[in-house]
Length: 410
Image (tube, rainbow, N blue to C red; front, side):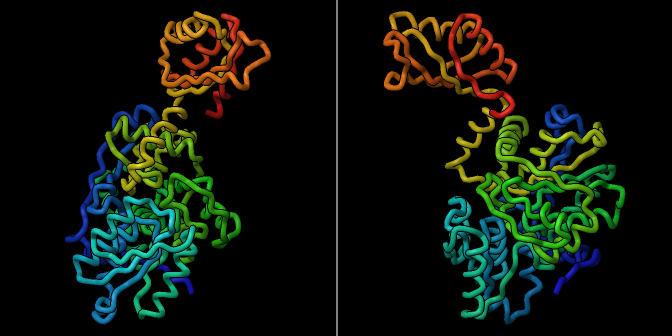
């Protein structure tokens, strides 16, 4: 049975959690405004103690438990941020926390949960498998299960972000909200639309797990294929029933972003905002960089940067992918002379065009029949896509046989 919260639930949640969460700032970003053509304000939810907005719902849900439920403890399935929120606020309230994570959960989230005192169980290769196992343990140990995106108390807690935004940026015109299980967008959209119905709400989700888009088409939550995504916090194959019942009434539009766009958004936030943001948190900016929103040109647009718990072990790879998507790293192949001076001439052209060789590998085993020629695979640092095109044209003029990537599909 669908349980839909009301605006008063959000007001009560905000009052309940105000002493245990951070009222995150929402400053204007001049560099992001310049590259998007909008007046972009970033709601810095990664400044919460555990690095994500999930603390709001977790605190609200834990405080609403009965004393008996708090004593026995709670359990949840989570890819990381919901688990961290429960672990931290469970520790503050003295509530035992058990979290079941998929085996591929980011290591930083797993270790931080354990440091906060939660019992962490790794099970399954997806959030669905983790959830099924968590529900089994819940029954065996008589714990309370807290759904990380569809529990009414969770949705109400997340709605407090919407209230803060309207106070911090009174003349807001649009909010672009990442969608995974739907708890964040449901709570925020109810709060915002109640007070300012004219504010445009745009949802964004990864193309590799577009469960809300599928639900909109079907008119109800449906399961979608869950492919790997940098936005692991949004990788929920079926949007929550309660969340969808709210979101479908108020969300004005939804767009999807691919993995290259998410990587580019992570790079831009690190480079321009000096903010380390995980894929789910960067999805809103990815939408701004990829989609045309002419109705929002020059308007006040809020991007909730929902979390900063990116696995440091993959951050470097993600940034490199972002550089490639931005035309600032290029990998190509060329056939050059294998005689003395051949490599020097090739490298000289790259230097003359203002590019920088990052890596070069000779492929002699699979070169042409001409023993005097060799194929080289080269990675160069460039300024942008136009610079790559100029380098390509220069090699063509010099008579080199090259293979560059399609610049529209870096």
